[in-house]
Length: 428
Image (cartoon, rainbow, N blue to C red; front, side, top):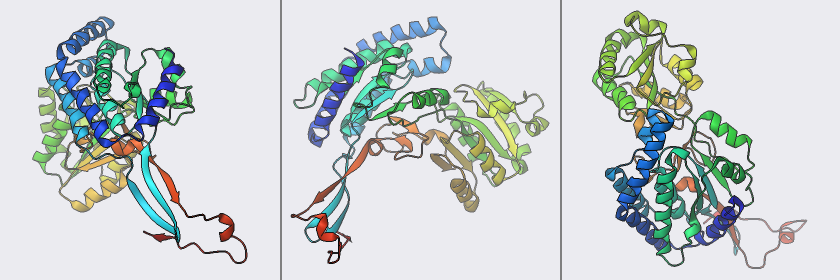
C-alpha cells in the first residue's frame, strides 16, 4: 500500500473517530491493552531481533536503553493505555457559549485535529502511548519509528489493530504504520490528508521536517535541561534533586545536561556533587570557575553547553546570581524543562517568570516533565513550540475547536445599514 493510500484511509478513519462515543473508544483502548498483555512473548521476541540489529550496527547505548523491552515495560504499556481510558474525553467539550442575539447563539466546541503523523526513534513503548492518546481524542495516527525498533513496532501495531478490530464501529485504520525514510518523504507531501506532524528527535531533525512539508509541525526537539542551585538552596534537597535529574534515566529528554551553581554556595556544594556523581560513573566537565574548586575536571568548551548528552555526562557552571542563571538558560537551553533549587520564594518566582521553557520547576527534579507524571495519561511528545500545545502533549493538545452557530432564520443584512439590529454578545 502506498503512503497516499495509507493517508487516505487514515483520513476516512478520522472522520469516523470524530463522532464516536467515549464508550466505544474506551472499549477499543481496553482491547488494545489486553492484546499487548496476551502477547508479551511475541513482543519480546521481536524486540530481541531489534536489539541484535542495534548492537551489530553499533547504535549508541542511550538509544539501546530506550529500545530494550521486558515484561514490566510491556505491562507498563498496557497500564498506560488503561490510564488513558480513565481520563475524560477531550472531544466534544463546550469551551464557551455566547448569545449573539435572541435565538442566535455561538458555541466553541472542542474537536479532534484529524490525522496525526508521528515520527520518533528507538522507543517501542511510544507506539501504544501515541496510539492510545490519538484514538481517545478522536484522531487517526500514522506512526514511523526508527529502523532499530522496526520489528518491535510492527508487532505492537499489529496487536493494537487486532484489539481495535474487536470493537464494532471503530476503524482499524485508526492506527497505521510506515517503515522507510522514503515513506516519510511521501508522508510529508500529504497535506490534504494529514493535519499535523509530530517529530521527536534532534533540533536538526525537527527543522528538516519543518522545512520539507506544508503540514503544521509540532516540534519535539532536544532536551537541554538545567538545574540551578541558588545561594539560598537547601543542600540536601539540592543534592537529591540534582542526582535524580541526571541519574534517574540519563537517556531521557528531560534529564539534566547543565548544572548551574550560585557562586556563594559553590565551594560548599560542588565537591559533594562531584563525589556523588563520580561514584555513579558520571563524566563531568566544568567552567573555569568550577575548575578552581575541582582542578581535575576537564574544561567545558562553549559548544558543550548546547549539547544533549543523553548519557552519564554533565557540564557544571558557576554563575554570579539568579539573573545570570536565567540568561544562561534562555541562551543555551532548548525550552524544554528547567528547575531552581532555593528556599527563597521570591527568587523562585523570578526564575519561573524569567525562564522561557515549556516546564519550569522549583525544588523538583526535571524528570517530572512527563505526560504520565503530569496526569495526562501519557504523551505524544513534549513540545517546545509556542503554539496551541506546549510541554508534554496529552489529550488536550490533540484537540482543536470549531465554532457552532445556531440561529432561527437570521441574516447578516438585518445587522447592516441604517436600521441595523445590534448584537447582544452576551455570555450564556
